[in-house]
Image 1 (cartoon, helix red, strand yellow):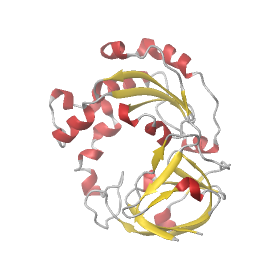
Image 2 (tube, rainbow, N blue to C red):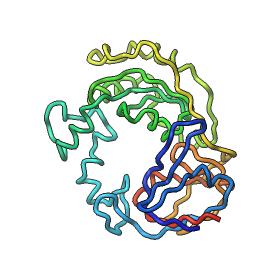
Image 3 (cartoon, rainbow, N blue to C red):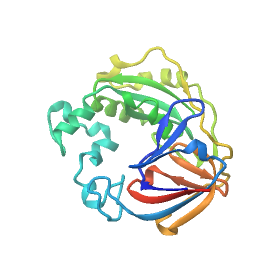
Image 4 (cartoon, rainbow, N blue to C red):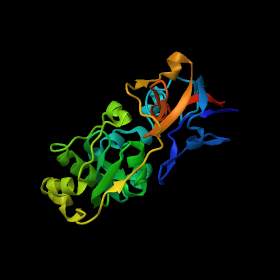
Length: 264
């Protein structure tokens, strides 16, 4: 059976293991049900997530013009310390920015390839951790807006990583860490304006991913260049599909591509 649609990041359900869904306009696939099956991915065309045009995707599912215009791709998305909605200052669309920035945000520690600090909206816990392929995570600060979360993350970056090594994450080359101890160790570096929001007592969240076989040497699939790929799906972690031949496909980084997916 063949399904066609524009790629967006897989929807997830927090369970043991995580459940993954690829959602198209008229269909959805429970990807867990495709494990140990042969599937073919074929590139069809581009479809910008904003304008819908068949124009090469630049970043985050948008063509170049849309990327530099839509509020969903503004600098404060990746750099929350640049948020200004709490001051009533517009970047690209103040109404959108208030909706996203002026809500509870979490500063967290997650262990995917190493312990890292990150920021997410409270309603995106634990989705954000799942998307990063973290096998354990913990909230350390809950603040009322994105700006405070950003300046807290910025301060903690001096003492803990803020990036994930995707190859190490996919190889499952990881060690368990005591994130409660990490939280207590980092408490002293939280900036003054966020100290009152420190979460004093909570426990780690542990996540289990549906993976039968981890790749020894992950090789990333460029579906635009290859046009078509076939392989046996043996795992899903983060936003990656993992195949038996060590090929991995990052669904999120291919947002805005229309593909055919054939299940044998």
